[in-house]
Image (tube, rainbow, N blue to C red; front, side):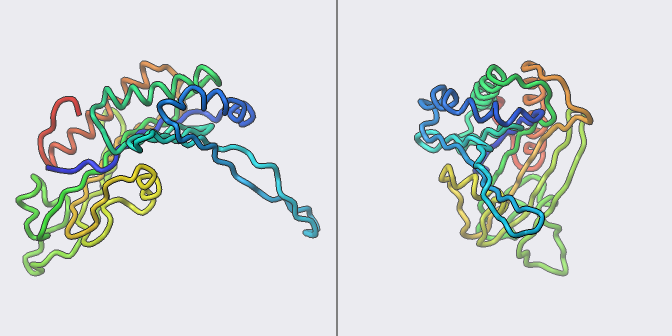
Length: 254
């Protein structure tokens, strides 16, 4: 059975006023300190240079995001003035996952009023272990999406394939392949996963099935919580269908 290493969801919305976003820091901390005791406002420092280049001075630091992590490091979130990312190493069900995301989303909307949505997505990073890359045919239903089998080249030594599909709900971006003695997570995702101490087994042969199911409207759409929920659930259904076709059947709740 596949090991679900890391799951994340993202809701993108129209940029909120930065001063207003900064002003809710204490309220944010108080509201979520029980669920996410590790709360860190992240800031960016910039510099300002005058036209003749002789004067360089730091500009006031501005809070650009709030980073939250649960006590047991099972869940985490990053909230910015333009999006919310929720991630977990302990995915239980779509209902459980959505409830956590909805709580964050509703808080931001209540305090700052989200007007438009421009991105909704959910992504699943799956890992399967094998002792021999040539045994993949017994590991998944569709070994062809991992690495082409070439009869003239009998020993497979790794691959990475990217495929994109469009469906009635949005898009699916599939990254699949075989990595040997390497992390099954893409490099850009490692810092996020490391915040939760995700169980990343880089030894031996690792089969990667990374399914990113997302929706980007051509124009921002008015924010309606129930519509966001419906879209998130339908994107999860698309991701699940891809997983079932490639790997194995899943419990209905996942």
